[in-house]
Length: 173
Image (cartoon, rainbow, N blue to C red; front, side, top):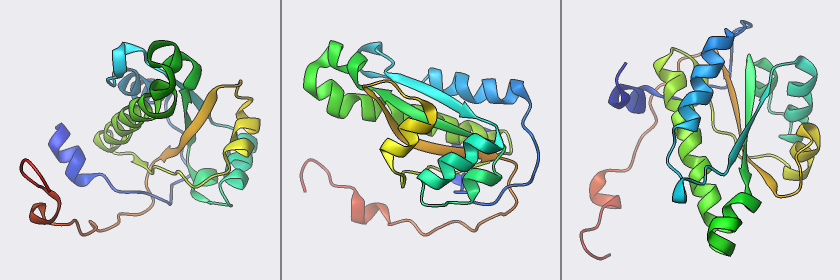
């Protein structure tokens, strides 16, 4: 599948088959994340792969009981290293660039998952401190997203998108 097809076909999947992912597949997803662009090539990210039922359950509880986090084969917790970003870019690096950089890595994971026939979902609704505790995150390592990944047990229809005429402006608003 080419990247354009992955962009068009990717869906937020919230129901997964009970099926493990091969280690090589997980590594392919993480390698895609690692290849994301980052400000000054600082690469201010860390990826925690939760594969045990116990850890996925704890993450689910920190995410207001979202069941897809328990059903998925794995959950990747994407974290922004605020300290590393700040060393290169000060406050702007800590508050903005590390978030932008992790977002690029997240998108790479989502598109790669789609291209491999896997389902995923970008989850941002969670209690940061609770997730931080579950993954034993050090100070300055901020959980940004939870990505349940596995074999999809649903095939959602595409969602409507605003037309370009509503969202694109040339030169000015």
